[in-house]
Amino acid sequence: MSSVMTGAPGALESPAHTPAERNEAYRKIAVRLIPFLVFLFVLAWIDRVNVGFAKLQMLQDLQFSEAVYGFGAGIFFIGYFLFEVPSNLLLEKIGARRTLARITILWGFASMAMIFVKTPMQFYALRFLLGVFEAGFFPGVVLYLTYWFPAQRRARINGLFMTSFAIAGVIGGPLAGFIMSSMEGVDGLANWQWLFVIEGIPSVLAGIAVLMFLPEKPISAKWLSPSERDLVTREIEAENRDPAKHSSLRAAFTNSRVWICAAIYFCVVSGNATIAFWSPSIIKELGVKGNLQIGLVSAIPFIAGTLAMVWNGIHSDRTGERRLHCALATLMAAAGLVLTGMWLHSAVLAMVALTIASVGILAAFPVFWSLPSAFLAGTAAAGGIALINSIGNLAGFVAPYMIGWFKTNTGQLSSGLYFVAALEACATVLVLAFIKTKASAKA
Image (cartoon, rainbow, N blue to C red; front, side, top):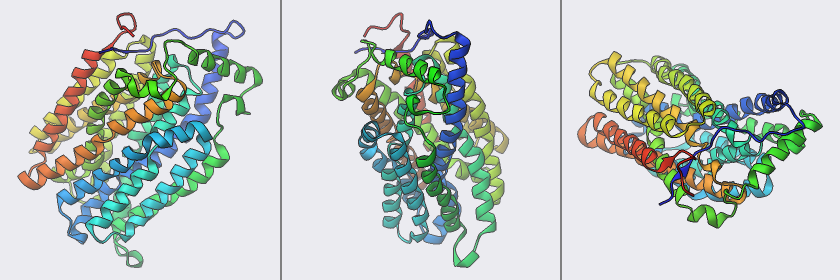
């Protein structure tokens, strides 16, 4: 089986531009695009996982079991899986602006529609539709960034974009806690219903802003000088002409390295889904009382994860090393989840362990996503990145459902946490076994 090759340092130097000019061009792109893309994903992530906070009251109001919640939280990823690749292929065909606007507006409406849930089937249906509507956003942005940044700059750029995971956790927890603490019974709606409405509206507005703000490619970016547009366009085009890269859709689906990456990503995402959907319940289990207090405490692991994510991406780009940066992160995630399960009797120790797990989980993402773009381009990149993300995100169904199943059948969260820890450990093994340095890899 072919080994997955990592990127290596060494930019395509343009004789007409100095390193300082090149750095300035990419700095301008990062400053202009990354904050807006982060804002969009924060909205997407909040609308995806706010059900974890709604659960604190929603299950009691609707008489849902933990297993019903776990299935409903996870079925989002089935819709996500089914429509991920078509959405990304559509993005390549019609452009990022229209695709990302459509995704953002529709997921906002789907989130707000959660206020009408009365039965488990309605819960499942709307969570499934939310996955359908959001499908393609994350891999779409990953693909979009390959239009703007060459390979040797992508780990840190991916890291900056993926701080949205952590920022959403930092913002989303306290915000959800505040809404649920202050909106109970207002205009006859439950606090969890207000949570879905208040957090869905900004997504609809943001989708409209995408149509007005987002440029398709460097050539259409008026805020770059003609020289800078030419520089970036030529570097990206030269990189995509690399004969070592696959460019057809068929090549993406038949390349063993794509499937290896999908397996690794499945294991990584299992941890991310766990901290996203179950952190409020874990923190409540530790004895923290009050929705606002739970929200504030839940921000702690994500703050640490934000710092780790940025540092790991920058350090990986600086050294050109991908393999150990990813493997050590997933190993830390596995250890943290095991310790969280072991230390649920102690609030302080469990929070330390949950923070360790979050650091490992989040630090793995930016380095991981520098791998597929090292050997995919064009249509293969669109399809391959979407395929990896869609298969990987099936873990977002498996992990919440299995934790809910374990909780319902054993009365404990620890068994479910050990299950997810095993998946993170599998990610470590797969990375060490199949990801090689460029020097030692064989195509």
